[in-house]
Image (cartoon, rainbow over the protein chains, first blue to last red):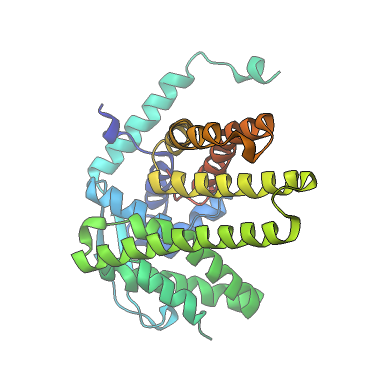
Length: 110
Length: 195
């Protein structure tokens, strides 16, 4: 796998969050879910920049929704994970499982 | 209830025009939720924090979607921020010089603090601009700057300071710049600006 094909740490988190939330997830929802699950305060700009990168890699797809009053009359961009996104997550999980195999953290941390 | 106007203007300036409405809408939605739960002051503080932390990502995001004019504006804004920062540091140096005087031995620690602050800020900015391998790039940039520009200047004018203090100060600038770069990377990772 070439270097550019690996998921960065934050890309991995965002992609998993889109998968967790299901079709129709959008920026604010993804940001809030990341904060809720990981305890990590993500910047909305970083979330959108990462989603744009994932879309360019064809790992997610997006579409524009209708403007709503609670957003000051502004539209949402909804996201859903693509088949390539699922494959990228499977690859990342397999890689981590291979790296973790046979490694005991108990002795290292003692 | 409306978000702070200046913060909104900053988002409008930094976000690609195609996606401004999306980003601003997301911020607006969360702003109203926080204002409802924790009050307007907390919501304004949250909006400002999100704006300032989002600017680096928004400036670097979807560069290909920007027009030539927008790219020139972004470059000018980035250059202006750098010049303003250096200007502030220079003013601090001038004020310190007026208060303590250059030759005073007791002012040595003040100069050391000012110069290292310069180095930390410069390292942080450089690492944030580079984004990938920021710490390594900053280390080599600091080494290059010290060896090629500062060492010849100090060596050519040894009477300006006690030689040992000058050399310590010089090479201390390298870890100081790397410290700035490391802080910038840690903050960038925590906020998701650097993946």
